[in-house]
Amino acid sequence: MRNNKVICAIAVLLFLIQGFAQTAHAQQFNLKGEISGQDSGKLMLTYQNEYGKRVTDTCFINKGDFTFKGEITEPTVAYFYGAIKSYSVDDPNTTTLFLEPTDMHMLIKADDFKNAVITGSKTEDERVELERQKAPVNLEMQPLDTAFARAAKNVRAAVKNNADEKTIKELREKAGAIHDQFDPYFKRLAVIDAGYFTAHPNSYLTAYRLLFDLGAISLDSIQMFYSRMKPSLQQSTYGKELAEQIEKMHLGMPGSMAADFSANDVNGKPLTLSSFKGKYIILDFWASWCVPCRHSNPHMIALYNKYHSKGLDIIGIASDDDRPQDWRKAIVQDNVGVWHNVLDGLDRAAKSDKEIGQKFGIHSLPTKIIIDPNGKIIGRYGDNLGGTEADMDNLLTSIFN
Image 1 (cartoon, rainbow, N blue to C red):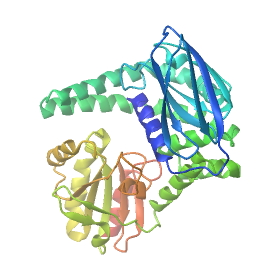
Image 2: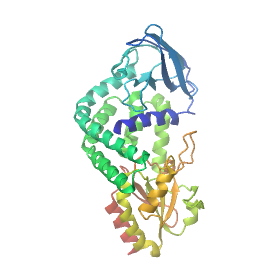
Image 3: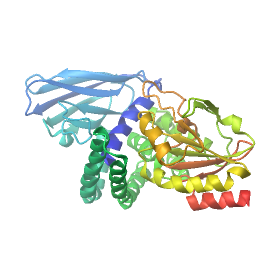
């Protein structure tokens, strides 16, 4: 599942950067290669072109040879795949690489795309070196990866087969317990990333990887690494997206006025944040599939019961746009229908500003934001940018007692 998140993040980043067309002069890239173990068939390459648009190109294999050509303005990550057997990042016929506006060469084997040898791209060389540094940690983590993938598969199978809610809950709890064991490994990998960012402040890989680490490192660190980039990298596609995300994270920090939003609640009634002015509000960013979020709900109910009569309200904002039925079930099962519940507003068809989480720089769940009666953010808790639930409790105590 950890790797599935990576492939989802790649897809999201390819999607997010649409619209950031570059003013630099576009240049042609040429990616030629040979694939062993497959004389015919087709290969696919997905990347962002010189107009900031996502391109999916198809190439037919000719006696083991293939060629891709296109125009780009800067190094850009691409998703390369062939006869895929699944939509998992672990599929043996998928890999990623950095394209550059130059001549590149690829040697690849059918059913072993992960070990492709690519030459001609400096940024790809850097990516390979960074992955080499991370390899010992990833190797240690492999048994945990395997166990979590199996547990996640069991959850999906139970949901698909309409298993009873108790069984599904137990399987999710098991998967969540395994996932919690990743933390020490993630921290070690983050240290390696930070070392790379420090040593390579002007690498396109640094700008790209920082977008992945938004939910893992502090805002101060992100800003520091961004400030060290040369102006041309800051003005690149990844640099612009990073600057935009930093700005959004600032908008969700204490001291900022909360961005207004509108959505229909779980009962189909319109809800607007500004209509709650005069009350203390907790924005609870969660999801039905997020085990830590579900564990937090009893505590949130206790806070609601304790302070609601004194002027506290809660708006649950769920990242369940793809699974609204699961969202509705979770609201009933966890008894959180006592407060307001809306969906985040994710629209995979087009980039938009309708996602509520984007307005507050949300990159991990659960995250809770407290807003005062004047609409100012006075607390953020749960993610890498804020404090703990205990800190949140202390703030509420100081307000209402």
